[in-house]
Length: 279
Image (cartoon, rainbow, N blue to C red; front, side, top):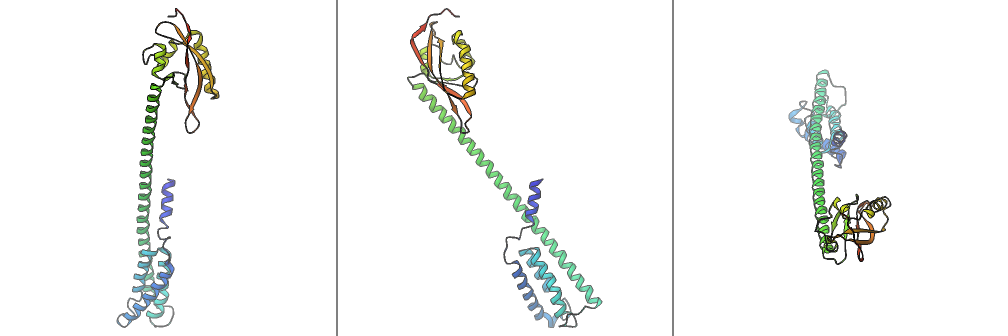
């Protein structure tokens, strides 16, 4: 509703940006008077306002309401003075002439209002078309930018995973809930577990029972503070022995500073393998 009201209000200013409206009105009065004088030997007292009526309509079409009213009302005074008997005197017209003057004023005002209404409607349609086009372009730019951002994120993630997979160090990423989102090949090689065995929530089954609660507590603390911390936990390998992993836990933030996931590069301590019979 507010948008429609603003559009209608702006439509009233369809001719506001066109300069020279009132000088053009003065020129129209001058030209209309000259033309009517040239036609006076033919028309005499007939049609004393016809040239002013045409001038008022033309000025309304190109310059708007105010200048056209100047021509219409100015034409009444000039026409009565020069072309309504007695010629050359500004007297109250006789009853018959007065009716003709009133008729001219009514026709002029009706024509001006009609042209003004049509011009406003045309200008309003143009405004609506421009707004719709601007919104369409904005949506298209947003769609393209969103598609570019998604593709850039996918490319970045793919490159990260490719680099991480070839890295000699253990690398992983975890979501805010603590579950693993990504583990590189070196991680699985050190643990002896099948690739993908620790994705999602299944990682908890591979962590030493004595370390699981501490790990979950630490992740909650890091999630609250956002501060990097040292972390160590034991993961069971395919041979049934637990290997100790130690390293730092740090956060990854988006452009707004919001923590989106955690990453770490723990190092497996081969000398700290612990035999166990845990199932």
